[in-house]
Length: 394
Image (tube, rainbow, N blue to C red):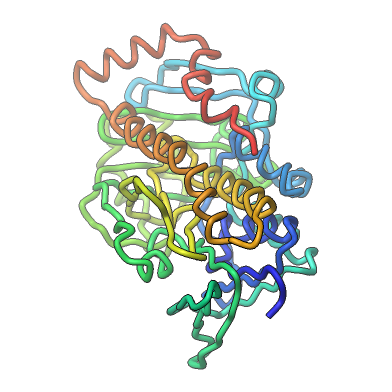
């Protein structure tokens, strides 16, 4: 077995990022991904300054230049009246304030950039069509069993990183590390060509429409050639997966009393994809045991209302890479250091995302009070509310 070998379960954003970080720390990395090919999944991703700083650290940021869009403004809009509640200048202003750019990008374009970097790294072996099923630890070595077309492959390494998502097999096999919690909301996602919406939606602006029990987000992606749309509604169906489709008519009722601009967004896609929203209750002690740990959604899945899911996985990857680079012979001890470096921060972000859920979806007098506060707040203050998130760096 090669010296300082690591197995990563999962080739999503977090899995690819940690493979890069570990390889650059001097490790031989094998990435096991259940998908036969890495296909386009999801829709847009907002990359705040903490996320782009991580991508720069990993050597990936320059690969996004042709596909990412740098927003020039962030607008908060009353979904019912269409009136603007608040606006923050982004672009160079935000980059100067927080020390790194804010970008928006299609998830597939971000994954493609990470994948290209992984393929350029000779010490990373990406193996598709491998489903991690079990692992065992003996004498400091972890043996990982993966199903490949009905056959069982065995991979031996000094550590296993579970980056296999909110329904992580690695977390399940660790035992007692929490289960996903359904939050009775659904995210409806679509990407439409720019000509399908009024021209103003192609502007480099992130728009957040707020209303009782629902909200809508829009921003351009694919170098400005498409617009990412997300609608959040109350929903009692816990079924999950990107493949659950719906027609615009299914979304018409929750937004029937909203402003015409919001209804235009809802009517634009021929088909929406529905994703039931789950998160994990914060873990208080550790994410792993021995030479096994977790990363990204497998460790701390969070609601999307601060757009920090991908960013926190990228942060995990950078911190784990740094910690592995500092490790001596005791890699298990290094994994516990990584977890302690991350636990407090991701717990705070998880809790802030839950708070944002309540604030975004207020109704009645509480909604009016929130809107009054937003109108009185400057653009800089709007961003500084989460400055503690955006200024983080590896």
